[in-house]
Amino acid sequence: MSMSDPAQQAAALLADFRAANVLAADCPSRLVLGHLTSRWGTLVMIVLATGPHRFSQLRRSIGGVSERMLAQTLQQLEADGFVLRLAHKVVPPHVDYSLTDLGMEAAAHVVALSAWIEAKLPEIQGKTAMAAE
Amino acid sequence: MSMSDPAQQAAALLADFRAANVLAADCPSRLVLGHLTSRWGTLVMIVLATGPHRFSQLRRSIGGVSERMLAQTLQQLEADGFVLRLAHKVVPPHVDYSLTDLGMEAAAHVVALSAWIEAKLPEIQGKTAMAAE
DNA sequence: TGGTATACTTACAAAAATGTAGGTACTTAC
DNA sequence: GTAAGTACCTACATTTTTGTAAGTATACCA
Image 1 (cartoon, each protein chain N blue to C red):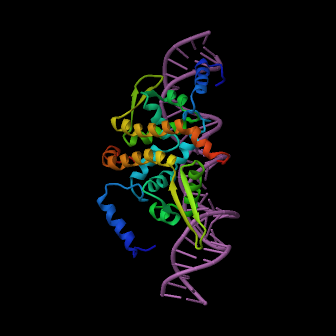
Image 2 (image 1 turned 45 degrees about the horizontal axis):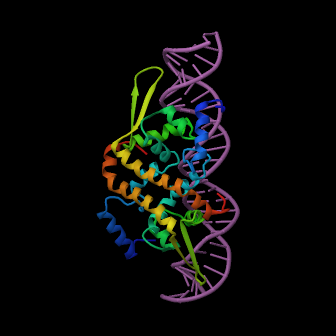
Image 3 (image 1 turned 90 degrees about the vertical axis):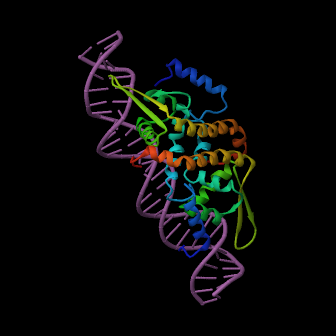
């Protein structure tokens, strides 16, 4: 558990040469991965990949999100630079959400994963059989 | 909120022609997506994508996992047919975990996403600046 | 004889995520 | 004038997730 393990020392040393490593507990990439793979984050990216949406449009598109969670998720994705928020100064409010270039790249991966799952679901469920949860 | 909205009815109708849809709250694909994008599920897939591992080997490779969470995560992934568990009947126990063919396909997407994040982290952090959380 | 290692499971507790309900400010439709 | 729509925020309660510690059975090492 201490740093007397040579294998651990070598791993720590290697980490310095690597920009980021999701396997390291304290690597910032873990946070980003967390945002992109969060319960609602993934779905928001998938919907925005089809084009810009307004807040309530997103809410209606994503089955089960609450306003609170949608707002929170959008803020995280905006902070990471994946989502662009464009508020028109009118009343009632009108806000458009869209993907940045960075967001589009990220979304591509997320969309690919979810599309794969949707396509393979029958096969996956076949194997799962009666396993619960 | 009721089903009197024609747009919602159309969406519901369309869903019947689609095998699976992660945007629907009750679609089973959501569960699978959840397993693959869970905090530890993603990391397990990433490590297993590099080859078979034993339980404690996985535990050491993935910074921060507890035994409890690793065991639970592996069971989910096994139930979905992504991971194969091979227990040798010896004492002390020896169990090998590896990806099934299905698991390798799934892992490819997860690995692509995490690799992209690792590569783009500097750019992402640059945009994030001082945003917390 | 005691400590370490393997691969777990279980009970309990703490932490984190999420939902619910209410409020804001204003406008259009009925 | 009343209800609904817009895009949120805040407080509070509940649910879910996750961690911690202990236990299981056996064998190897000193």
